[in-house]
Length: 409
Image (cartoon, rainbow, N blue to C red; front, side):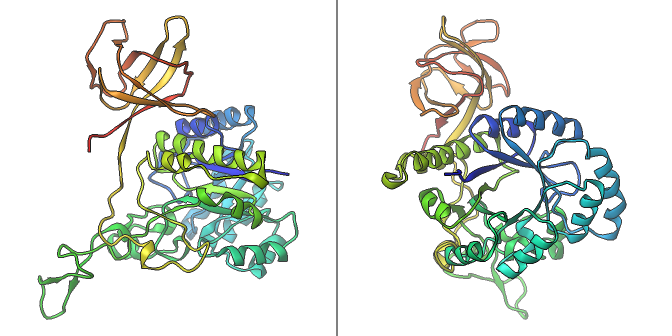
């Protein structure tokens, strides 16, 4: 049985390597131009070359997002950019705009094309149209239910692949086609500059009573009427596979490497467990608990099972839940001394309880008993960003293992 692909976000080179190390089958990233996540770190051409080589050495595919809706002034720069990157071993291009599709095919005739969720693909006739244009994969609109996806799969030839989002932020607008940011502060969401006004707090003002703010719902401070919960489908791996989805996509190119490692690791465990024994597969609640250890909003299954209701919105706050802090990443480990070289990411103090986790492993908890600076001198705490430390580990670790701690409640 061919496994469903686990596709992870790579907002920069560090996140790309983290996604690869923690079990992604494929990664997607933006270049410095023409991606819908202009605020992410994104990758220079040199970084793309390095990242692709790193991923391919471990059998991981690489997709470049060029999914803006281009304006006239974008065309010549696009043509120039494609000339510069055509030698890169990119496995597929993610596009929304037919014009960009044409430009890619002209510059790189054998390029594999994936149609972005921004193209609002919601029916099999549209999918058939894209297939006739030489498209290999459709990234489904988030508004599709399982029943609709199953029908799509039946109407399409087996070589047409379906990709669907399974984890991450949900856009209040139809598959991301939003004008709020453009209207309010002249930042075009469809060209990668969304300011996320759907997460802002709103109140009602009557035309003849300026300055008098009336509550919507029951919050006297206003309410977040457009604020969706985060999509989370880790409990429904069997349904995703049975629906015929080729690739399970994690949203989050703006997220941290800690986020990428945690989410990819949890989904990797769930997917692998299913394929080991599909008939007796049982979801493990610890996988969901892992997801909750990164910054997140409350979760929803979106449109998969039915149309969302008011229970899929959060009217009280747009703030994230942050119960854990990412405090360090392991650079190396000496099994003789049991000391790990760790780059600090947030403050840690001797005596605290910390959790340690890594690729394809279960996490473990220990007390922070031995904390040394880079020269080996004992210290009580590590408050300096990216400080190099030596930490005594109770269990073996390896490069790219991560440390976290629960925040005080």
